[in-house]
Length: 142
Image (tube, rainbow, N blue to C red):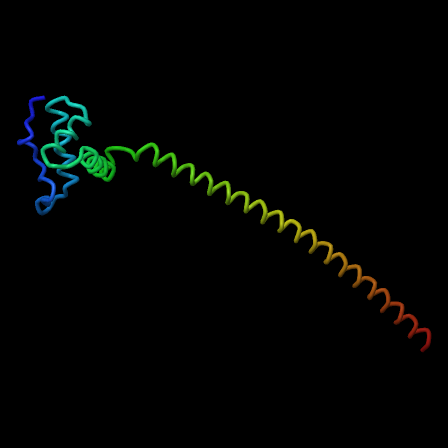
């Protein structure tokens, strides 16, 4: 590990990043540089940058991964993706169950409408038969 903490190109805790850049980008660039130059693990690099800047290694890592995800160079954390997929699956299952209930109610309503239409048809046929009978009786009377 040849890198000294004084050569870390990230501002100390409490100082802002220079205009035109972000702290997350600076941390990302520095982590990538140290990984390429010194062959350290990311955890070691996070600890080194944290020590040099007065930040917790987890804070350094969070900034690194936040920037990496924003750039599309790493995928979202597995836990986050799994929870999102699980929630989506639950939403889909709930939506499917609701859809099945609605379709079932619609089928019942259609069956009831068919019965009502048949009853109206039967009434219309009976009324027509009564009207025809009445007309024949009028013709006989007169």
